[in-house]
Amino acid sequence: MSIIDWFAKKEKNISSAERLNIPGDVWVKCTSCSEILFQKDLDSHCKVCSKCGFHFRISPAERIRYIFDHESFVEYDSNVGPVDFLGFFDTESYSDRIRKAQQKFDRNDAIVSGVGSIGSVPVNASIMDFFYMGGSMGSVVGEKITRTIERSIDDLKPVVVFTSSGGARMQEGIMSLMQMAKTSAALERLAEKRVPYISVLCDPTTGGTSASFAILGDVNIAEPGALISFAGPRVIEQTIRQKLPKGFQRAEFLLKHGMVDMVVDRRQLRETLQTLLQALNPHGVLAK
Amino acid sequence: MKLLPFEKPLAELYDKIEQLRKLSEEGNIDLSGEILKIEQRAEKLRLEIYKNLNPSQIVQIARHPNRPDSGSLIRLIFDTFIELHGDRLFADDPAIVGGVGTLGAARVVIVGHQKGHDTKENIFRNFGMPNPDGYRKALRLMQMAERFRMPIITFIDTPGAYPGLEAEERGQAEAIARNLREMAGFSVPIISFVIGEGGSGGALGIGVANKLYMLENAVYSVISPEGCASILFRDAKKADVAANAMKITAPEIVKLGVADGIIPEPLGGGHHDWKAVAFEIERAITSDLDIFKSKAESEIKQQRYDKFRKMGVFVS
Image 1: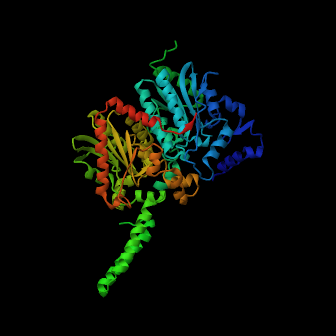
Image 2 (image 1 turned 90 degrees about the horizontal axis):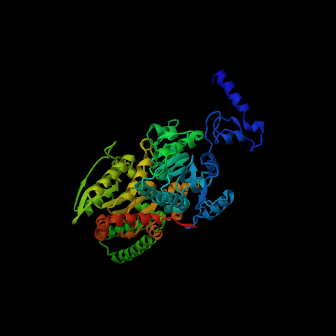
């Protein structure tokens, strides 16, 4: 370690939030660069660190606020809720997990669907929530994604899905696997109707979610730094018994390997979506 | 043949019978009474063990090294078969076999995961864990089936898609997802059989079928029992509990409406008699192809869509 590194390290330590002992709801420490950020500033930057560009994971409510036209979003299918049909019990019962999550988030499951507009372009949209049981896909997530797609098959509005999910929900066993086929089949029908589908892959999008609707966009957009993978890095390291290269399975890695079309900063996402949607949609009308 | 742990008591009895036989021959003593008694006991135990298998024992049978594999079953079932290779993009993946075949008057395309029976074969076949190239080969063959109006038969037998570095680079997720979407759009019938392990997305990647059958001792699950145990139970040794909790056996998968029927196996598992297994599968294929023959293309596609559209349990 050189003396410069030593100073750099020391400086980092001093700016840590623990030492400053600041109230959590006013100030936030950046997960990536440890910069102390003013909560209100962070919110006006779509929860992107103004110093290092780190994209915080966000809730569906925040995403709606950052991406959709003001008060344009109307939720549907909020009544669709999960059932512990296998009577699944690991360290606690699935019923208990559902009940706790529903209380905490005041929502049925890990997804919000609705109709709204992005830069005046109307779309049907689903937004996943990683905070709710890891954004895992069970029957409800699969059903709501499918219904969103089916609405677009009927009304020909483009579909935009924001993914953030660890994969299939194990507590629903084989039924959660089947959601991959159900959603992908609906997308096949959507393509037949020539309705565009844009998938926005957010951190993280892995497992069954990545291997179904998330990667099947006519255009795939990834948020910077998002982990996007089929198998998780830990599983791969155990399988091949070697350390993975830096940046492996991150958004930029997927761009390099041709799996996503673009990596877009959340602060420019709304504009990018608007332009793309207008250009792609054969059923829409171009604004002058 | 490899003995499974729960078969040990039975094997001990068979050993004893063998020993007594030798003793009676060498010493010229009549032990037939004793032998008969033990044989009766063994038969009783055999029925007791195999008629009451628990999910984790069924997993062991599904993974038995001598379990009939796709390639062997294909050759036993079909009148002709020509294997075709390669995805035309990058490689030929030995973990998936496929080709064209005939069964009576029917022309079909066949695709299946391919495991090996010993270490050498398994290394070559990557233990039946496909890379993206395997799924893309499968898709290429299935698209050819659609073009030439050939029903598609698939055999599912994989621990899962390969979790490797290159697999991720070449788009494992994309390869599987694309298969799900494309299979949903075919207007030729697809009949799938889970012949051993149906491991997660890697299984489903060739399993979006009009009709899905489970072999009696096959399993189908969203994640391996070991994987589920280490994530949810935080203890990989609780795989047997996880196997039980996830409902992965043939009767359970049928009950959930994911599989349409069960193909019977010889007592103790398909590895005791490959031909018997092949015969039962052939019967199912023949009878289904007969039914699909009279169906319109749009009807076949619609039936598959409706089957998957219904899947899911929720309140609303």
